[in-house]
Length: 335
Ligand SMILES: [Fe+2]
Image: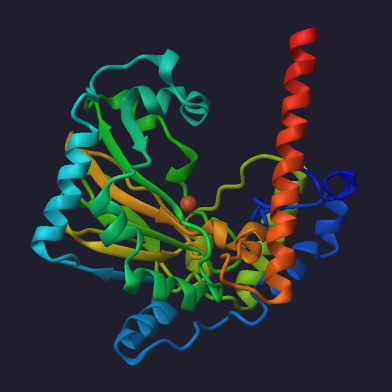
């Protein structure tokens, strides 16, 4: 009965196309070029939106990034900031306990000894009402990625702070510190600065214009895909790749209440800390729009044949996955 699940795999519904895939030979033969073209079909340019949003779409199309200072009305911003402060009230960024490191933090222990990081998924009202359900953010996202938003995006409060200013700390890097594109198709991440952020407290870094698909970008994808298939290691790019694409990295500085909408098909990286000021942000990540779950998540009032079949299929896959998990847990308990 669970044939479909076996064929399609456990992560079928929730997996977005990854940046690199396939072996050396496939990539030497141009597999990544084929994937890049395929996943950009019909979405080289943003979709039309209503008139009052069009000016923002024009900037997204030209730069791949949009920065809006003083984004929320003062009162709304205060409410979001208060929810952030409440969420971190019991947390001391200066206290280090490696036993509590997340998997990601364990992979870069030196970096996370120097840098305090805590990520929270808030369930609070102002964050959800004003930020997650924001009409402008959602309209820009749907226009750039050409997908209807059917799932709630990944959403976080994110607190980063350097703990001390020593020479050692300058050497420890996290791989988000190197310029990279998240993927080779349009994808949106949103940052709301909750405090003043500049080059000294790790302002987001972006290379304007590098989100565009052109011949140079295709060749870069080709080169990186072959390199990745060979070492199976994280492929970092550098400033040469960015100048090859005709751009340069810039720190995106802004006061508290600055909104940044970024197409992370473009090259970007996390900034660096040369002060002890924290970087406090609220963030959205719309990568899940690329999944089958987004395509197939239909509301009960969508009664057409496809929607009904889609709902059944999602239910079936989720049930099959749960049963498999339960079976493997009970097997483990027996052994
Ligand atoms: Fe990234």
